[in-house]
Amino acid sequence: MKNLLYIGNKLSSHGLNKTTIETLGPLLEQEGYAVTYASSKKSLPLRLLDMLLAVARGSTSDYVLIDTYSTSSFWYAFATAQLCRLLRMRYIPILHGGNLPDRLAKNPSLCKMLFGNAYRNVAPSGYLFEAFKAEGYANLAFIPNVLQLEEYPCKDRPSIQPKILWVRAFASIYNPKMAVDVLHRLQQKYQDASLCMVGPDKDGSLAETRNYADEIGVVSVTFTGKLSKKEWIALSEEYDVFINTTHFDNTPVSVMEAMALGMPVVTTNVGGIPFLLNDGQEALLVTDNDAKGMGDAIIRLIEEKGLSDKIIGNARAKAANWDWDTVKVKWDAVLK
Image 1 (cartoon, rainbow, N blue to C red):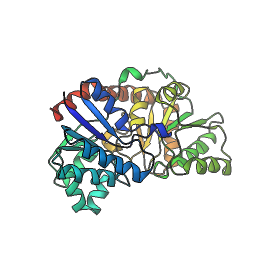
Image 2: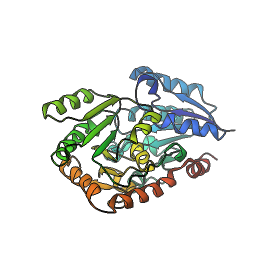
Image 3: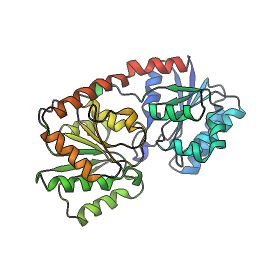
Image 4: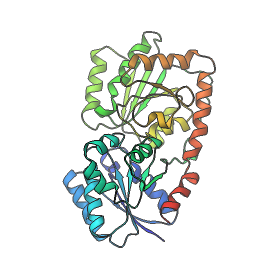
């Protein structure tokens, strides 16, 4: 049995969405790995301290998995990795930040210290795999984010209605106000168009988005707040199109989940999205912040015969590559 220490933001108990540490970790436990976690501390300084103490106490761990992002959480990864180096512990950054290529360019020396000394750098997207490869990193493994497909019933949608679902934390980088603009455009053509926005507030964007909808006179917007995965999957049966409005992204799990549920996806083509999805095949892609383009793409799904069926079928087939039975083989190979 291998002992793993998993470092990441384990914050769902504080009202935030689950991240990879709370999905991948339990799956690894099911496969017989002994997994210890850090951290669930809400305070940023206390969380970093808890992570460092976990590394210091976990010196007998076979591997340290580190969820690695491109913004403030980058520094958690950097600090814990340096302590791992000091203690001669094998660590594995799991690359999540859609803006990590910019971090590689802006902080090459720090990145070399973090990623160059890793046992492996696990990239869940071709986008980050190629970006790191281009910077000379060879200690790479491609392992996609994981879904358990049996949790995602694929609803038959023979005709698409202008019922739109958005699922993400409310944060400025995810551009939630764009979703309101998209609905505003759709309602000029379809009076019954509606939008449901699911997710917790992260930086005040939830209130801003509510106020923005009121300011421009958009109705038929529902804000649910945070829902469990089971709750929003059940809710998804009431909607026909999934939109992703983000400014930066890597491989968004919510998009992958929507594909598994049989919802046609319309998304901005930022970051790793074009590496994940082929435009016109598994989704419809539009440029960043292009509400008109996204609205037009939704109209195509509603009115263009056969388009939604093709996209739904291709997307569900691709989702099979993310099932745990497939992905766990790749993790076993890295953690052997």
